[in-house]
Length: 492
Ligand SMILES: [Zn+2]
Image (tube, rainbow, N blue to C red; front, side, top):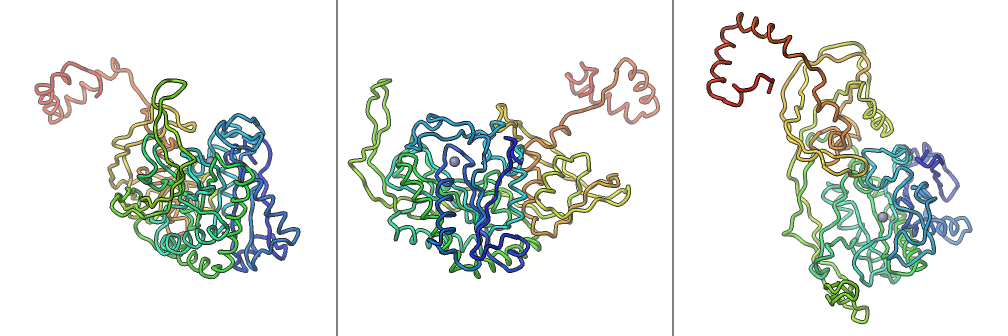
């Protein structure tokens, strides 16, 4: 179901018509999940996927043995129904398209962890049903002008990590680049740069936190890609390049099927056993890659509208240049995994999200006291402006202590010995980038609930001090040292 009240569709294509995912998994086939129209103003993938499905159905294109396509034709149905020719005013076609926000005005490509939209809850179920080796989430870019029709964002390879990250960076991406080059499309990493700067200075890889499709997929050991066609290229050309890129993925997966599946199996086993997880990253500026960028000369001239300097690109002056691409990240924070997390059942919105992600968890069988490590939120700052329906908590600082806590029958015990370990760390460690704490799921704990009437408590307090001379001395000492304290009878 989606927030628009219409169901999501999933189109499954295999060379022998098998569409049962239990069978697909048992026979170790490789699933490529293709998502379209998450931003409905960027519909290239919708049309390219229809062309792809039609070509396969008509026998014009053969799917390699063992490759299964799982296609979501349109993800943001609500946004797609809200149509105009003007939402992406820079974009070169098509004639009309949908709107970025969904039926709740959410950007669904920020919603994969917090899952405020029904789309995200449904996507998690589709994702775990299909367990894709490769995720392709088709988009159209904004930003600079350049010659490339197709740009490609991938899961950040250090964050994907291990053998899979290495394979992505050293084998898979180069193969896709070379396959596309043969078809006349020079790929370039998603052109992610500050418009006030010169694109010739290069740019940093887009940081795909778990809230994004590719960041979410990386938590599950899936190779994820976000193709971004260039908004200023004509629509038919953009659709064609999206089509060709998806074909390149299919061809590559056909050849590399065994290796990709083995890498995933090993990565999942490693995730089960892994003891520590990185939850903080920083860009390593010292090790840029060098990429071939085909741009247009740019400069500034007086604006005819404002008289102020304005940026322009001169398409009569194309150039080809090697530019630095900063795509190395290193760890800044790490956590040891606990034996398990325990979530009291009252936090059912969190449990609901864990359930759609197929987390193995057991209800505690009887009321019991367990010695556990607890986090105390020492410091945080809620964002002052809303972001995607939240005021996310930033700058989280924690302290830990051991405490005996009373749990009740039905509270949830979540063992940390499962392929979901990394996802669980990212959502349950309060300091992790896209944790449920940051996304406000636990904000109610930040407020004191019970109060008291001080006039009535005065006599109780006086009586207690009479019986505890030690405490009385401490109170006197503090009163003589701390003027502000001495002048206030209110609790501090
Ligand atoms: Zn987009």
